[in-house]
Length: 100
Length: 102
Image 1 (cartoon, one colour):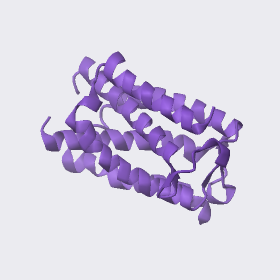
Image 2 (tube, chains in turn blue, orange; image 1 turned 60 degrees about the horizontal axis):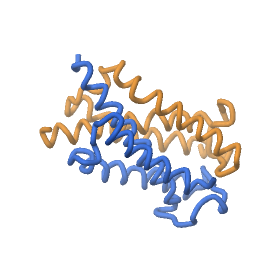
Image 3 (cartoon, helix red, strand yellow; image 1 turned 180 degrees about the vertical axis):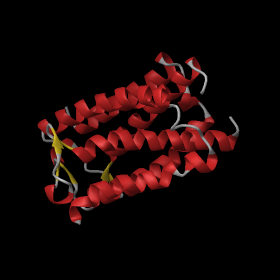
Image 4 (cartoon, one colour; image 1 turned 30 degrees about the vertical axis):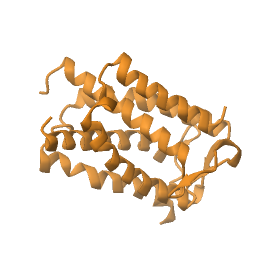
């Protein structure tokens, strides 16, 4: 298993959870896609510092080697999954209890 | 000072997102239970993955740029990352939703 494979599985899982399990369907809506570019900018900035400065270092055999702003592309997939799953849970939880 | 690098990145994210709460009144931080239920389980899963990744040597951390406090094999900053990033994402999401009036 490589980081690449695991990150791809994470993205697939996140989308499946969003669309089929939690049924929040955020990836089918405009709010998520309007939010995600903002998240991405901050991720590229943060990741840029963390990987560019070598705070986090990757085993070259476990990643594709393709990088954006110093960060392995796998990090972007991983971040997408983290954010989507969290937002999906957040929205789903909001449907059960009205905001206080 | 270099030891604060990772922490500074997290602080930067918070600074860029926390203002949304009082200024746009997105009402995220007062929904403590909802926030906890959305963030903590996901953080738990990603922390387990992170522990595995570190164990399998997919990635490692430069001890000169972290505080040096570890929880198991993970720097505390990495744990905080899984709390800070999702909270910022939720704040951003709710802000966008409010702006789009959806």
